[in-house]
Length: 103
Image (cartoon, rainbow, N blue to C red; front, side, top):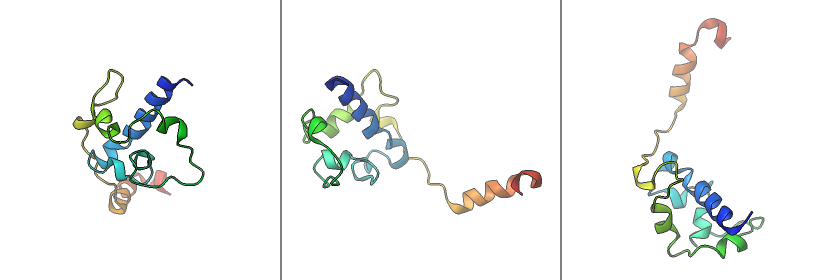
């Protein structure tokens, strides 16, 4: 994988949870490495950040993520966070299933 492919892949991965948590919480999403690359969290011992870290400027990376590209799924500013699914939501769906399926 060359540097451009790595950068595009990282961009995709770092933007992926935006429709779950929204733009404001993107950098603090616990299952994303974005906070590490922005210098807001420490990387776990197993995480290698040297190659991608050398390609991005932590002070500009969030602004770069906000600039749409032709291959983005959705521009960052157009994604609203999804509503969290609750146990009540799940129970309602299960209760609505026909008896033959839910048993």
